[in-house]
Length: 340
Image (cartoon, rainbow, N blue to C red):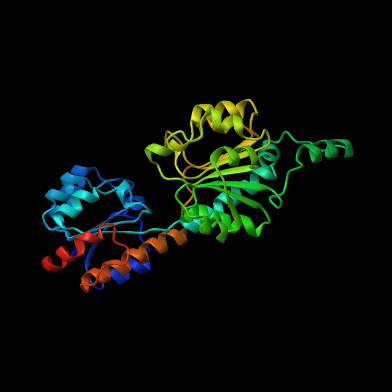
């Protein structure tokens, strides 16, 4: 069997997979290129690959229906539907494996770090010092800046978590360790799950009115588009912070920019934007109360290793005729077994 891997993959996992398959490794971070649907299909057929592992490429119905030898699709993402036409794969009897929770801890840790950086005004302080504009020539100068740079502590703050999925839950665990109070808005999670992280389940309005920090962890759905708009931002405390490391569609970006520019909320940490990839022209970088990162929430070595070994484990299960542990379309498995 042959495998085509375009995902970022750990070297150790790659070597282990190579013991069982002929592997062609064309990771996007090495080639600096994401294959189009046409390129992907041509490459699958020319290489006669049985297994395809992607991270950024989209695998649509045309690819699935016309890839002659394709027997298994792997997706290094939390939600495989963002990359693969699951219905088309199921119709053809092709299992789709994926990597739920691969970047949970990475994103959650960066969320907490961003909150602390904002509370302590670290980014603003660091930029001011690096600019060369800060001159301490007397004790009076020192006192002036010392007062300006006084920040706040996470301990004792109320953190509102919108969406208590894997990442939201992990954020809640970490936040509680700092002594913060947790409010949760998520109509789809049971009360027991909220209590497990010491949180209180509330409606969205209550969360916005009472939180010192609001952090978003919801998927891109029709029901979550512009969940935080002008009206919701007006409900937040003037001294509140907004953190969005989930997806850009959940926030009305224009309304947020306006609220931050006018200091109607104190600040924000943003990792996702309408227009990506982000560079130095991003308008939020002009605001000294905003921390901007270019969609790097899950970008850790541990995430790559985690996703690689999750895929490796399920590919090996597949090769042994065992049902993969992380199967997006489990209904296809019995049919797949008859075809192996």
